[in-house]
Length: 158
Image (tube, rainbow, N blue to C red; front, side, top):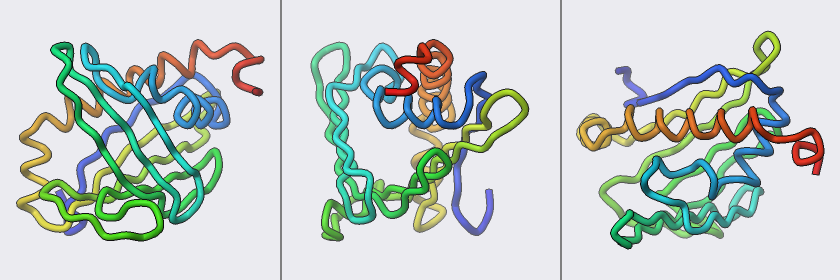
């Protein structure tokens, strides 16, 4: 833990960064929420100030909406979003606001995928950790790897 109040998970994915990026940006309903939860919808407008909205659902039907904004986009390399703002730079209150940084770095014959959550303070970071950050985000990263590694060349290029 550092002064950045950061939590992170990292995975090596046996697919090139452009394929992992495509899995991340176009197949979110297949991987974003740790099973047995499902991702009902993913609505991203991949430009600074664009929306980053996701709806997740428990096996019992309980829904959680995540609304956020895109801060930075470097296609196939880096995506930064936050829950502290919504589309159009509108501030949003919340106890669990953080900045999410996803990176896709070439590594050997694949990609080093890293997902980071940076919090405003230690209390928020520890609360997120205690909610099961490592297990949940780790499971989602494993699911992303599975989706990316199973994309066909046609799916990866479309």
